[in-house]
Length: 49
Length: 269
Image (cartoon, rainbow over all chains, first blue to last red):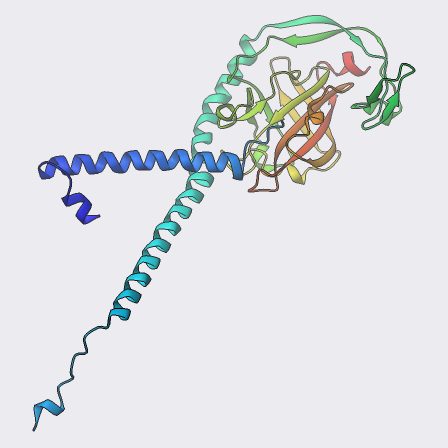
């Protein structure tokens, strides 16, 4: 993680911005993955057909 | 004193020890990451979805109340069918047509439906995704206060509230009105409907009024068994949800029949 952060381009402020954006995008993607797994395996809402 | 005899001699780490350390470290980190992902999944599914659903429910209850006031309610003529089949009964007509009885509480009760023209209250069809009804089950704590029902059973509809299957009649009307709901996520409105037993009461508020249903049967079927949504004689409410809890493998079905409400007399008397 530290190596990844250090390896980001630009000055420190830009590194922080990039890191925050990447983390947020990853969290949103994770949310959709969770939602998809939940809807298909855990609870689809009980629909028939 | 001879120092060489008391100072411990450092042994260089062998190559195999280094590899083992790296493997243990990798397994450890992987376990932590997988554990966090699973924990995140559980938190998201059980708590975050419920929080979202509760936010939506507040707004949807207001929307339903508005719908009760603004929906257009009209009187239409209704001709009650003379048939008196019982659920699951198979009849063979003289022309060879095989019919599986889907309704027939009237026969169960020993009083066949009387054919003839009646006046039925009908409300205008709700827009897809809009809340138009509130379902209440007094014996289930979660549904004691009521849960908004939206039109549609697509995933996005069911994330907000219980969903009414569009091609089935609205609650309170003749036929088989089907409402689906989550059992473990998104507020889990139907979490405890497996506890319902015949005779339990289900109330549905619509623009027409409050329709009271009584549970007749609770069954478990496969998700593809569409027959549970087919039309029935009389006025029925069918609730569908996932079964068992925390699995979408099967469906729990609750069949309930109209026993009171603005249209009861027109349908059954």
